[in-house]
Amino acid sequence: MKIAYASRTGNVESIIKALGVDALRIENGNESLDEDFVLFTYTDGYGDVPAEVESFLISNAPYLKGVVVSGDQAYGEAYCMAGDKIAETYGVECLYKVENSGTDDDLKAIQDILAKM
Image 1 (cartoon, one colour):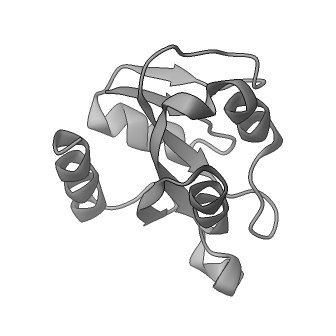
Image 2 (tube, rainbow, N blue to C red; image 1 turned 90 degrees about the vertical axis):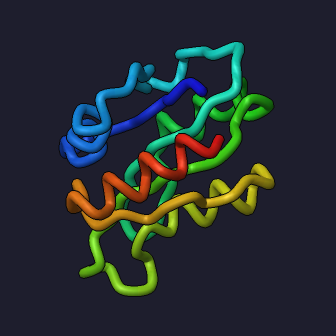
């Protein structure tokens, strides 16, 4: 399964590198995929989906199979809310929520999830 990701502060990019997976980086939302993928994204602002991710999903959503989202628990109820919004909008599962760049346990859990897909 392909991975697409967006990273602004480097947390999501760090997760992708630690997982050692081949991934498409979403820079401006004009990128395209023609195969099933899992989206890794950060949460913008106070629980918002990043603009480049919204643009990317407009043309690539039919292939979206799940979302892994990074956030900061300091935002309280908005923690990882972008993943919940994407899951609800596109009818997929929010597969995992991770604090910033995650821990070794988070990475293992994400690897296990991806292996089952």
